[in-house]
Length: 164
Ligand SMILES: [Zn+2]
Ligand SMILES: [Zn+2]
Image (cartoon, rainbow, N blue to C red; front, side):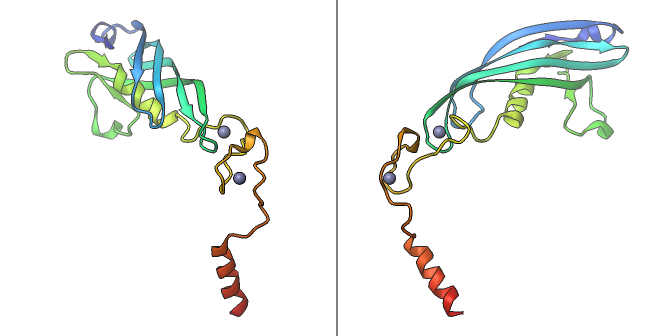
């Protein structure tokens, strides 16, 4: 997952394409995820840019009902590439080539996954989640627990407010 960009750095219209897959272990709460990155590093008359489509697949858990949620997500990646970083450029956007003229892509794409992957997955819009009392999955129907009953801790709070 290292791309040789030594040649294209000195070539005004040089392009180096890549297409590789890698296992993903940087996402919390996600099992067996893998990603594929397809794209190129291209020199546009001295401005070198990495562009790629990053696809990640795996199985996560619904934030509300904890059901498994298979997912496939795509992200567009576009980052400037430099041979060495000048201090003025250091805004976190730039990718810096390794000393030997190669670009290590996996850390770049792992960073993109961490930044772009949703922090909460839902099995569906409007997932009803689990009953706070009995733990039943409410998507499968009502469990019969009364929801009218007030949490005793709230009752105490209400009494305090009434007295104030
Ligand atoms: Zn759910
Ligand atoms: Zn219940």
